[in-house]
Image (cartoon, rainbow, N blue to C red; front, side):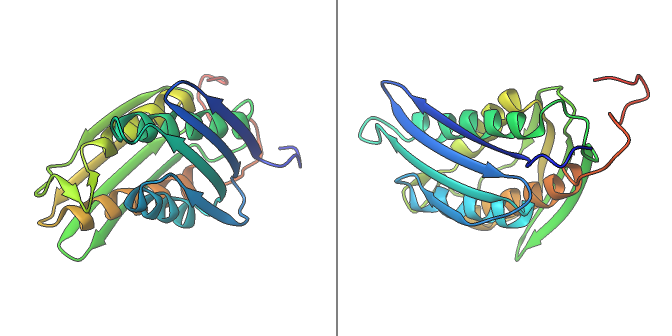
Length: 195
């Protein structure tokens, strides 16, 4: 494992969004602004529990819909994650967490091994948290997994409050990511010898 920083900076500008993101997998300051307060809160929880430094500024066509901003942030974060991991050989690869938040209980299991796949199973009791549409949580994770090369299973075992469920999803995912992306030496963790 080299001593190179596990960090990346990604900028994405389209007709729908303008996003600038800096990610450091080994920690650092966090500043998050997407124009969606609850989404900022969720991303802050993710970064805190994953142990990341994250500076994110996103402007999107929120007058049209929240979807473009949320999905594009997932794409950019996934791309930054892939760039920070380089050849995917210097981390533990697998992680899992079971995380409660009051009435909610969420399970997260992860393979950070260049195999993009998302299984998302959460039943939302309420469709919004404030003005945030919770159906977009799945879109965020799908985009992140595709660009980041992650296999993620995110399962809400139970919960009566969508705020608690959403927050538990991001905290549980962060805890699983902290395990899976923990630095290790010895090359790629695979019985094949490559990913």
